Amino acid sequence: MKPTPKSPELSPLLAFGAHPDDLEFAVGAVVAKETLAGRKAHFVVCSRGEAGTHGTSKQRTAEAKQAAKQLGATIEFVELDGDAHLEVRVAHALKLAEILRRIKPSAILAPSLIENQHPDHWRLGTIVRDAARLARFGGLKELRQQPPHKVEQLFFYAVTPEAEPRDITPVLIDVSSPEIIAKWTAAMSAHASQTAARQYVELQVTRARLLGLRANLGHAIALYPNEPLVLESLAQAGRGARQF
Image (tube, rainbow, N blue to C red; front, side, top):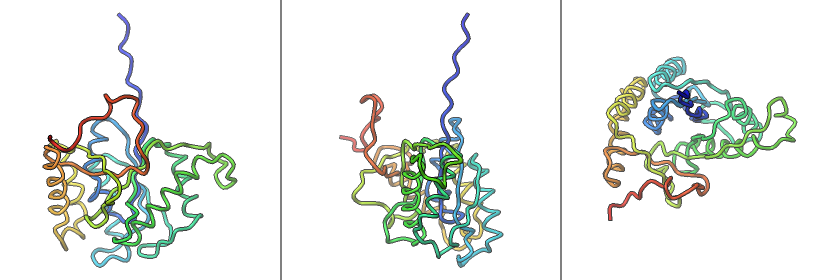
């Protein structure tokens, strides 16, 4: 009897957040779904939340580490300009491109480019988009220590309703599984310094519930592709959210 061939290993999911809690609140359910399916996930957090009203940077760093663990993800912190001081710089894009070449993800997540949100969010989204392009270029002297890497998909996420792009048709990720919701809720709750100040967990779960209802699902998360997705066949297309 021939041995059963192993399924090809999924390339890692790489997710960028401007602050220690952004990823958990916005796409924690998506990450939980991916890691439960056997995919590795890695978080890159670009500040320690030091400008926030609630919680110290030390506390928020510890909370982020615990939250990532709840979701089955690894995490690293990158020092750019600091919380509430982020600027769009080539040097930052190159630094993030180095991470892309090291992790070699096929898909990356970044905050949307809508300006009506925390300024660090849309600026980081811009930097990540630039980094995804720079990571492909073989002639950049700053990146020559690692081979070029091409990202297959860049998806933007919206931390708040105001950050949802109106000109991009979203991809809806079904996160209805009770196990996924439990992991997501635990990860958000790990940010006790933030959830004690506002009902963030209820807000985000309610957003997912309302979006799920539109698609006849329990809960869903919207991701916004940076460019049109290429499908090998219509069989990959899933179904439309509208129930005709």
